[in-house]
Image 1 (cartoon, rainbow, N blue to C red):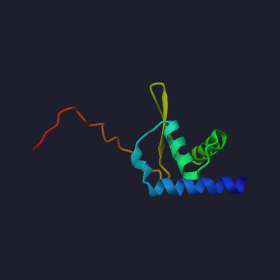
Image 2 (image 1 turned 45 degrees about the horizontal axis):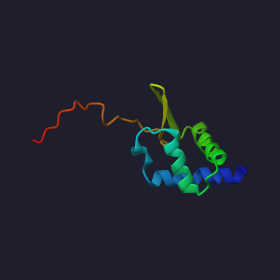
Image 3 (image 1 turned 180 degrees about the vertical axis):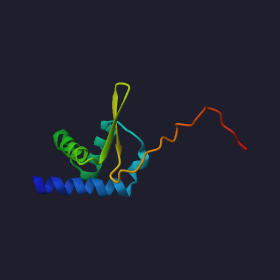
Length: 95
């Protein structure tokens, strides 16, 4: 199981890098679970949770708590995340 787990983790990382999932912003666990299940084709909750926890321990995902929700960002290269909506003031200009 360890060899297969490592292969699945590498497959998930490569697929998410290819899809450029860093730009998907912070998302909840359910979003990443569905993405992992689509990549691996394994729909068992315990296997999906095992892969996700392994990637989280390897610091592939950044974790933040916003209000009462926990959200994760796919960030394998430890890039600096800049929130695109941070400077939004609600006024749209067409100049």
